[in-house]
Image 1 (cartoon, rainbow, N blue to C red):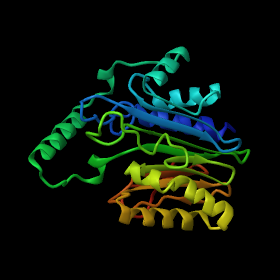
Image 2 (cartoon, one colour):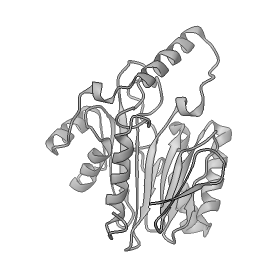
Image 3 (tube, rainbow, N blue to C red):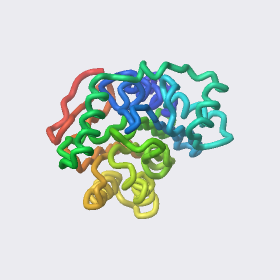
Amino acid sequence: MLAAGGPACDAVVAAVVALEDDPLFNAGRGAVYTAAETFEMDAALMNGADRRAGAVAGVCGPRNPILAARAVLKRGEQVLLAGEGAMAFCREAGIDFADPAWFATERRLEALRGELARRAAGAADTRDDADRHGTVGAVALDRAGNLAAATSTGGLTAKRPGRIGDTPVFGAGTWADDRCAVSCTGQGEVFIRFAAAHEIAARVRWGGHALADAAEDVIARLAPEGGSGGLIALGADGAVALPFNCDGMYRGVARGGVARTAIHREAMRESSV
């Protein structure tokens, strides 16, 4: 889309749709279960050029939650819709729905049962970061110089029903303006408390910080507060920042026909696209 001159907002939505459809990721199909063995998904989209934004929270039904967030943005009357009100809006907007069984995977069900058993036994939490949390996101810069960010998640394994994390909270887990675009993943409560995504944008805009420095420092400051996770950020000048304070973060950058990917702290691998 970007190579053809398309807008950043459309590009990030397309990227997130692909990730929501892949059951390996905690968003859309493959989302984690709540403690009640249900699904409650959140998604957000923000256009940096005019700061239009749309998000949904606590939904189960829209096949691609990011498309529901895009519909909220396009309608323009609200910014964030949650629960049954969000579901009714999605039906009115003609969003494609799927049965709850479509989102289910055996891997996520096993993770839920294991976590509930651990809690019942009072055992220590030995899960790795991939089992604790997960989010998919995309940031893009188009030929017109506009930025956009999109984020989608199933939340935390065995979360309390009704819990909403940082993904649909603009300025916490998702942000885009004319200087930078940010999408976060991790322990959402801490990202909300520190307004992580907007903190980076504010440091770039008002503090004159380089994007990488701002992003690295914010992620480092979250760690002592229990803010395990990371983020992807992109500047108007094309600068990229991919910091994380956990074991690893699936991440990639595509530019000039070359894609670079990594999981842990190894050097990024290159391939043609």
